[in-house]
Amino acid sequence: MAYLMSKICVFYLFLWTWNLATRVVVQAVPQVPCYFIFGDSLVDNGNNNAIASVAKANYLPYGIDFPTGTTGRFCNGRTTTDVIAQLLGFSDFILPYANATDKDLLTGVNFASAAAGIRDETGQQLGGRITMNGQVRNYQAAVNRVVNILGDQNTAADHLSKCMYSVGMGSNDYLNNYFMPLVYSSSRRYTPEQYADVLIQQYSQQLRTLYNYGARKVAVTGVGQIGCSPNELAQNSPNGQTCVERINSANRLFNDRLISLVDEFNNNLDGAKFIYINVYGIFDDILKNPSANGFTVTNKGCCGVGRNNGQITCLPLQTPCPNRKEYIFWDAFHPTEAANVILGRRSYSAASPSDAHPIDIRRLAQL
Image 1 (cartoon, helix red, strand yellow):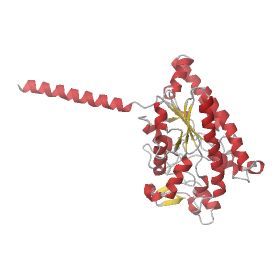
Image 2 (cartoon, helix red, strand yellow; image 1 turned 180 degrees about the vertical axis):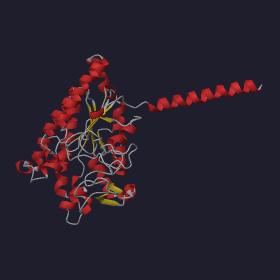
Image 3 (tube, one colour; image 1 turned 60 degrees about the vertical axis):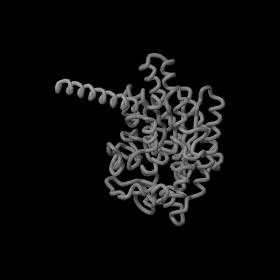
């Protein structure tokens, strides 16, 4: 009898273990087969580490709250695309293209590069960076590798059409170009309206190339409120708290045109499913009611130098603020993980109809 009971216990233990394993496997299947990311330092996760550039974050205190420590992310922890990748069901974070193997390409890679812009000259005062044009070229090379892996173009095209794409560009074209008149001539050559038109015209060509190389589900992120960053508050705000409206108004001009571009693509490109993520509006909500999200400090970086900790990025081995979840900004330019979690969650699943247009990432993944 004891032997029989022992066999029964082993049998039920096997069933329980198998059921648990099955549930884990089911939960681990992502909503899309792959995720490709394009952008700047807001989502760079290590592509600039081996580049001769000032725009690097592969040192502490960057990554102090990230599971694997310092990676090259310009944050104390996760970026918005890290949060989105988790919400999409990926068990691991998307790897930087610089370190990607052929196998990695099948689940997507991150092409983002700090200091990069839509325009090739943007960010050049900071040294090396992979511009949007460079990221597009890297993607084209990656697609050719995917074709070789999967065997033919049709199979590769079918695979890529199911993938999610996040593209966030334009911030540096203002921060490290248009509103840096001592280095760049763009503000003397173009009015804010003209500059937004120039950017969108070039951006349109870059996004269209992604489409031509298989991208169909594309979440395009607008430019945030650069005039509210600690860097701009330190330089241009009389009290260090009031956002710089001339910069924010220029950002809105770009975003308005980007919404129209998304509509144009959806109406004119066969199979295109582009959406616009309104980070400007989401960030505005956070700034207007910070306490609702647990924030107590809205105008200075958790680490940095000078007024508002907004002079430069965090210094190597600098001790950051201990209450990082109460800060919206991590350094002079970039949000904390706490802010990125909100931005990522609302990008994935809109909390307001204005968060995403025409749908959010969650619904885009289902198409």
